[in-house]
Length: 124
Image: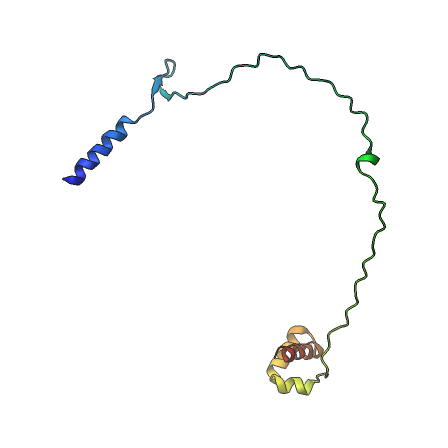
């Protein structure tokens, strides 16, 4: 009972809050009236001035850089190498023969699988 009174009250309020409509005589359809404010036109007529733009100078607008450019020398980095070189037997001892053959087939040569072993050894 309590909720039905509240529901009916809300429905009555919502039904009464409709926007004003005006029937269009030509189409017999209702459309919403929008209230818009248009400012009055300016009192003074403005005439645009003609501008002479022949004084453009590219050298002035985009000057050349006269400062001496500093040369930045990049240091040459030596390749990272492990202190001891690894051979095939050490690599097979570290990983199994199956993985060594798998890496050799995957990378195309035994040298590549030895490089893989060096990388694994350096991460441990």
